[in-house]
Amino acid sequence: MTTRTPFIAGNWKMNLDHLQSIAFVQKLAWSLKDAKLDYGTVEVAIFPPFTDLRSVQTLISADKLPLKFGGQDVSAHDSGAYTGEISGAFLKALDCEYVIIGHSERRTLHHETDEKLAAKVAAAITHGLVPVLCVGETAEDLEKHGPSAVPVAQLRGALASVKTGANIVVAYEPVWAIGSGQAATPAQAEQVAAQLRATLAEIIGEEAASATRILYGGSVKAVNIAGFMREANVDGALVGGASLDLAEFSSIAQFQKHVGT
Ligand code: PGA
Image (cartoon, rainbow, N blue to C red; front, side, top):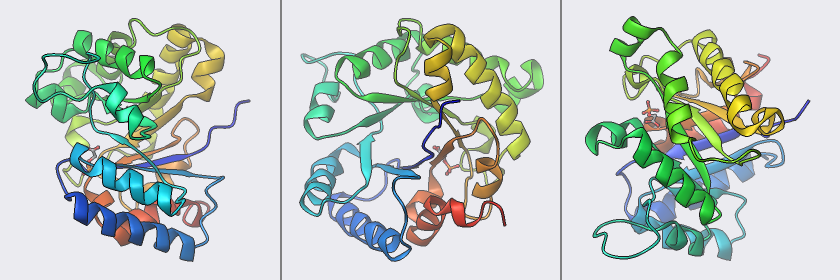
């Protein structure tokens, strides 16, 4: 059986400017150092706004901090006349390891379709970035189609051109749970994560599917993280609101202290 390193990711969305990002990352690193977090057993990543990335990169590299980071979106294009877009090549040049693709806010507010997201996933992989692909159903989808039909269809759509063995992270984020304070139950998250893993096996092969981290996202907090992490197919969390609260996010990263209690 493949062992998957748990992954705790903070999606800052459009919060914290570059100066605030430096202060936050410094304090987060101190907090996790004080807590003696073993980074061999959990990967901690932050996804700040694009304008913070250079500052975050400089700090992490200068202080040799064991934190990972990435962008919140990427262009499907490499370069050219695409005003406002950011190329995967630029993110890679800033040492980003990951990039979030297909967050529900991008799907809804920017009308990002499965085809568009497939092109973004391909661009990320071309530039050596690991896509953190977000999928999830609305409350209406849940009522109409049940829990996993929409996330599974979104997964197939966005991974249409991905090859066997691809290195990706998948985040299951039910839209009704994002920012609502009403998280899915661990059993609900596990049910969909298991379906996503089975689908991944068809797309990227058994071996890569069993190595893929599947995260849960949607109102994750320090008080509920342990329940999700106990599930067999849930390997981490994509945290929005709580990732902006230093004590909360630090505590979520230390989920091992809560699991088993
Ligand atoms: P939330 O957001 O933790 O604030 O619900 C999660 C996300 O949007 O990734």
